[in-house]
Length: 79
Image (cartoon, rainbow, N blue to C red):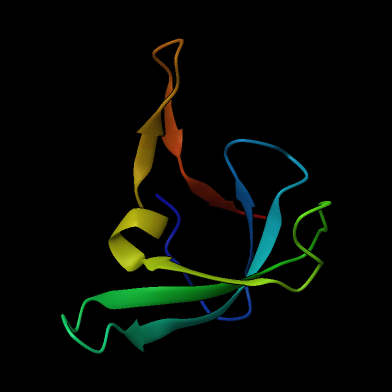
């Protein structure tokens, strides 16, 4: 499992070109106080420019996913 660390780069499991930089792993949801990760895309798509900011729970960011072929891997892998 890759731990979210500010300033570090990560690759998303869905595609090798989906690279992100963690801005902070210390954000909190204002209602639930759940730890959140704020991260920035290092690539662009037709729908989202490079530098788009995304947020997801730290638990989800650091989780593992099961691929259709049964292989389990990190959702985000530090590069």
